[in-house]
Length: 106
Image (cartoon, rainbow, N blue to C red; front, top):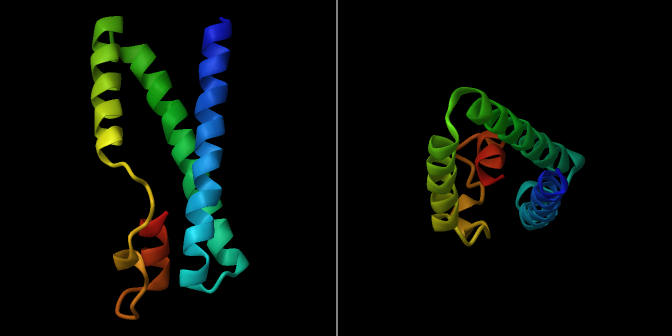
């Protein structure tokens, strides 16, 4: 049971290390107001909730071998998306709504 608690703690810790990094990079792009922080908080909290739902549904509906295959596939896809530093192309340029760009940058 301790390994599950440790894994959950490490996952949440890493998520909340990424959130301030992404928010601090995108703050100047969107004016640095409280709305930027709120949008990032909302995005990452919804991501955390989706992760918990994913884990719950995975355990409820799939056998352990299939769970491992699905999880390793998603882990490989996540590793392919590294590094997570936002690109300069993500900066708002005026022709797209700032809210849409803000959501995609998070």
